[in-house]
Image (cartoon, rainbow, N blue to C red; front, side, top):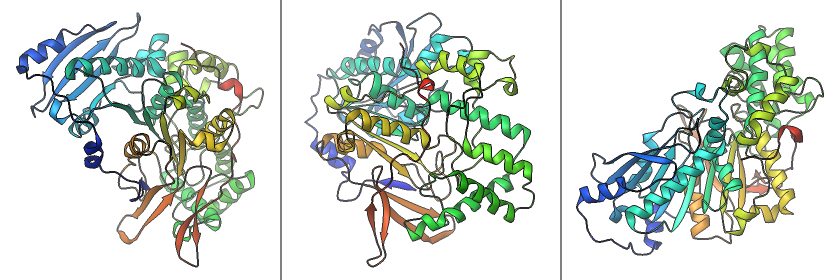
Length: 502
């Protein structure tokens, strides 16, 4: 699915810029004088390493190194469009995976769109090994690098333009979604609006899920053909529950299921593929159920969503090397004492699971978070669990939705997937909500399913904020919102979600 704001609620970039106050221009200065002024800016615990004009001669690129503590080395880039091209807005961009490098493509495109934009390598350069036994890197990757890039980015905006931004936004996906939620929870004053796509915010339980899957798949490998059969079996079995006929059999709109459903999918897959043995069935039961503590049986994370790729749901084990080093074999890490040690060391820094967003909401902050039903890299369960905790903390669904909306996107895999021809543009939705209609949350986003080589199978479908779901009116052949269920996933045990620490 791809999604955008409905036409009645969408403001184009040009319209939004037209609504902005007139740009206040500073007196013209020679280009070299401006660059020299930026190079002379004093940065707390940091050094400006480069200030240059880019080849288009329409913006200035500033590179910095921040060292807030011994063992910390954070790279930051700030791209500033020329004053006449600036839209008066500041944008922080998230990273992905283990980070460790800066993506110039996002900086280039968003600065070309008028934003003063900043991003960071999250302190993990040159590779994830930088975090082995180094708590300062854990802090940087968890939250500190994102906050400090924001602080220094705004400082350079003021130095360059002579004033601060009118609005500040953050946009990120996956690891960038972790950064997004950390900002809303730890530093509510940093941003006015935040877009967190496929958010890996429940970080240490998520990587426990990767380890669980990795250990099982090493003992009982799944081939690509078997993986495809299992996805097809889930789509077929769950099709009867689809509220929208157009979606039936193409993807699973709501993968929440029972143990009986899991067994039914495994049985159907085995009918389709005789290479799936009893050994496979036992392994698949564990994969679809998800990790539990080996001693207490407590829930660590839920399992691989039905209708998503099993083969995409393992690896990413660098966090365990951060705690145990490279000498300990992956297969020797246990789900008892080892998971307890791992959680105690990393979770207070990496997890973004604090349900108290009152400070962010009080200053008018707006947050939209998404997860895809076909995403096995960052499954939807933990975000449903988290959003339910936010509702409880806020006191009601309406109160939570006044500043924070969560969308479960049918058929969306991590970074796209079958039928996805571009990622969602949440930034526009957040910006419209914050600037144009702050007292009226979006009523829907609009998705579009595209099947490869089947243009006639393309259809658009409105998406409604959780817990509502998309329904179908057979008499009018139109979409409609229908009441959706709350929860439906096992809650992660509280002790695997410890309080945040600085």
